[in-house]
Length: 457
Ligand SMILES: Nc1ncnc2c1ncn2[C@@H]1O[C@H](COP(=O)(O)OP(=O)(O)OP(=O)(O)O)[C@@H](O)[C@H]1O
Image 1 (cartoon, rainbow, N blue to C red):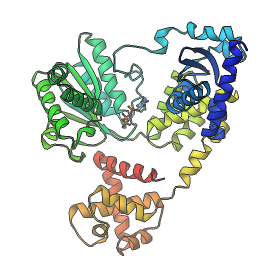
Image 2 (image 1 turned 30 degrees about the vertical axis):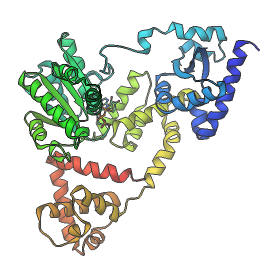
Image 3 (image 1 turned 180 degrees about the horizontal axis):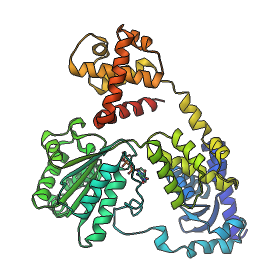
Image 4 (image 1 turned 60 degrees about the vertical axis):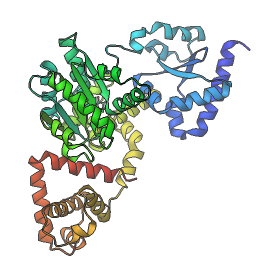
């Protein structure tokens, strides 16, 4: 058998294994179009039609594919994905020798761009869409990047999942480095910081650890909430913070919560976070979602008609990562089926996700439970007659959310929340609505509760 036959047989065997492991629809969308372009040593390269496909496969199916190829071949294979050039895409059955060439034609720097060892070059300010939900955080981030340690130190950026905190943090690093090329910028997640600390303690390398983290011009630390409750990490971060701050170095941290709302965060750290500027990122309104979607589409040469962008944005949650996921799915489906992206195609691709979501009915009891947990109260407190400020607030939030998420009538909600009159529910609903116009912390809290309720299934 010639070498290309062996490769084809191996791939045939592998896809049988993969087919057993994933749904038929996903198999047809993601696996069927793949072809092996090279098999060298312990490395298999598979061709994919575009970057979206590549990102999706890398994130979701790389391990499944590599396990299947390894088990068919009887030895371990690492998998990577290579984007087919347009001309190759048009002739699906390119000669094997030509296929093999494809990898060599792609410049190395296109495969793995390297600018800074830990900064993501795609997360730049140019690629960040500004809307009213993130305007403040964006302006603060630009100011810090242009004039580090001048005005806002530390800068504390907080917001819900997938709303662009990491993107902004990276953008600060990229811009600062382009303005001040000699600047020592370090981007690290709080978890990596902790892991490095543990290793340094274990291998007696604390002087090196301190040398590294206390000689930085701009420290960008992601997901700081992770260190809460971890005593030794908080202690070390506290000293790192002081050293950098005292010597006029910039510190930027991100978190999923406002400093005061991070449970188990040491008071001395919390107060330091409050020294500088605290900027929030709110869930985007529909116009910003559409603008982000259109920008992402444009960056990847995908044409999305306006009605389609509107449809996707109005059905995606506020999480922008999810919005991107929808785009990936749609672009891949369109490229595999050769169909243009229009409303019918999008409805077809997203129908399961959207149907599932619409069937996710939230009950009053679930809202009550989630609000009580968020405000550290018992359900009985919320239903009680207590006039305590925190309890009264939680009660009004429950009424507002019940109205919003269940659509129940005012008298119904009043009945369920301890036999209250419907006018009390109307009052609570109006009061919270009004507060939300100005109180960004409350807005973030409510969004968090809502996200949690929507994720229940
Ligand atoms: N305003 C924006 N413009 C363009 N892209 C955005 C914007 N906000 C978020 N994104 C994109 O959404 C994705 C998720 O963003 P990011 O990872 O920064 O979120 P995060 O807030 O750090 O999430 P997590 O809480 O999970 O750490 C990224 O691909 C990012 O580029």
